[in-house]
Image 1 (cartoon, rainbow, N blue to C red):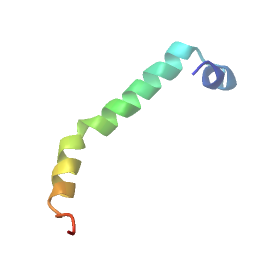
Image 2: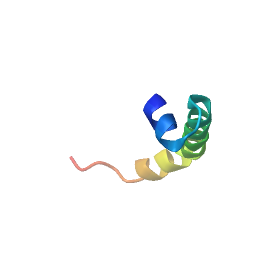
Image 3: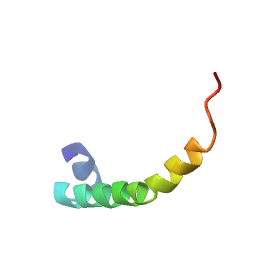
Image 4: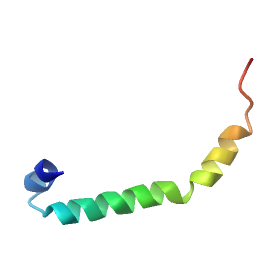
Length: 44
């Protein structure tokens, strides 16, 4: 994370906060995605 922050001229904390926001957005709809995926049975 330190290398990413240095490359972008930002603090490590700023990079962490952006990553946390991205992962939160991804996780917010995880239940809906999993429900959709589970509606298709696996072939046997």
